[in-house]
Image 1: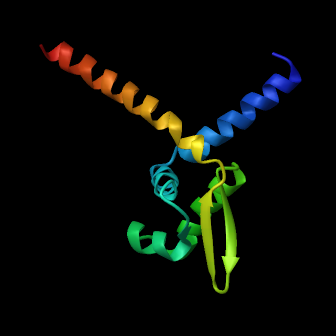
Image 2: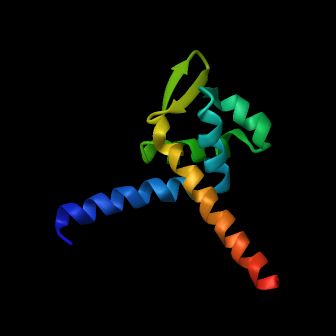
Length: 106
């Protein structure tokens, strides 16, 4: 693997790592429905403002979301909405794992 390939795989891994936390994955999936204010996530997730902001910053650093400040509020949206297209594949993997476990029981 050459230097450019390593850099590309490192960047890909950063995206997966950012989505690798349940709260951040939830946030990304919620943003698929449109932009959200940080305050909305604070209410829904039942976490403090700083925790929500840290999670959103990780998603932003990975290039998954972008933000826009409006007055006192910051709104986030998916930068590249197709990022969530892979979730159906992830769900298929989970389903296959569950089916394997069911097959073992039988």
